[in-house]
Image (tube, rainbow, N blue to C red; front, top):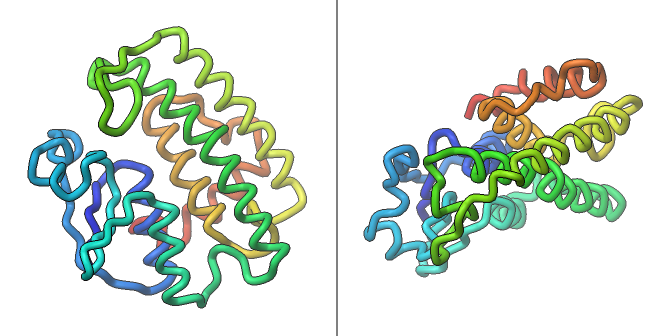
Length: 211
């Protein structure tokens, strides 16, 4: 099997952190996102959506979603369990993954894709007809970002990790989304939020975070 990867984007980073936590090594093909290598015909023939990451299995099956790729490897290698080890934990991880995706990651994506000239005509990721930017959505994304950070800070006030006492995929997704926001000039959510800052320092210090 082969993993198509991108160096700086948050979705590929989720998979790299996950695989590092699992101790799984896999052949990787790194595409240059900044120069649009993922938009070229060679990769489009593999993934028509032109998005990263993608996992190409030996039988030709393509899995082109970061969480789905991680679930595939979780099924292959259940330990350590990063999607939860009990029904309660599995439910909490799933709930927080959805919240992080919708309220945090999408907040960053909305603000960035409707602000940056690099995304003119491509305000929504993936392969679509031209979708133009809506500048007013930049403020909407920033409001969502700030609101999520406040909620997460309160949630982390009395627990070590997002889904409870153990490091899980929810923490991986949260770290990747928050770092992506900071890297793209969203307001630093750690400022004035001590629980979120403590959590971020802890998860960012794990060796897998540099994968």
